[in-house]
Amino acid sequence: MRRGFDTAAMREDARAGLELGQAVAGELAQLEVLRRMLRGATHAWNNALTAILGDVRCLLEERRGDPAVAAAAVAIEREAQRCARLTRALQGRADWRPGEPGEVDLGALARGLEPVLRDTVTAAVALSWDVPAETPWVRARRVDAELLVLLAVQAVARDAAGGTELRIAIGKQEDRHVLVSIERSATEPSRATGAWDALVGEAARMLAASCNAEWSVEPSAGRAHVRFACA
Image (cartoon, rainbow, N blue to C red; front, side, top):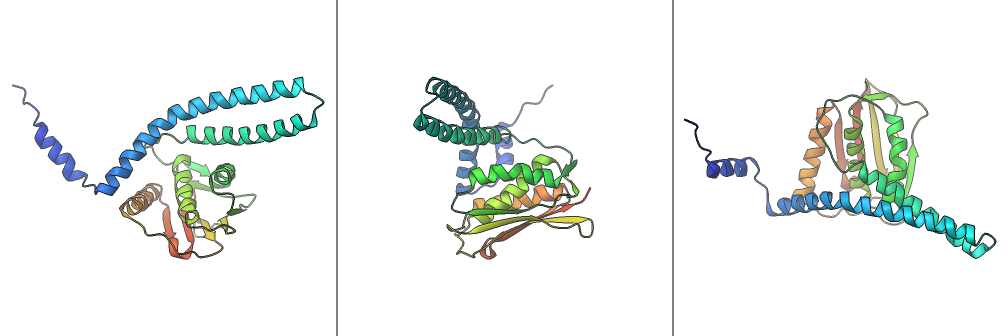
């Protein structure tokens, strides 16, 4: 005879395994709603940008000799292209699935993240990159390595005041490891961290450990690093 499911016991087991505080539960629920909304929003925004760029180019053809129209069209196209880059970046990062670590070119990864960060970090904060022409391949999935670097940069950038510089650098290979460091030029008082920040930090450390890397953030010192194992 088939035994029935004890749904009450199952719910109790689930609650025991996921003891979330109210703040973390709210952040997690909001994050999932935003993730699902993002899919539809980026699709709609991409269609709108395509229409805007098409209309701007038609206007340029119709008013070919008008310098005011040309200047306005160039400005509109520049901003529309920036938004299109952001849309593609969001669409490519909307989902995450587990998988085995592979190998990733750290220099190519950094160069791919450069425009994404420039478009998403406030323009009042300068970004300085130090990426050698030749960088080692490291042991990680590209999606995981990107997440670790993005989380580290965002953690340091969130307390940065206007006029601050963020320096992102890839160091030399040492002891079969390579360090990606993020440093803020000025130390600012860090905002208080909560349960969600602690959870994100622990998630980043667990993700790093899955590919033999290390993730560390020191908000009060204005620095962070990700230490990858070379492939």
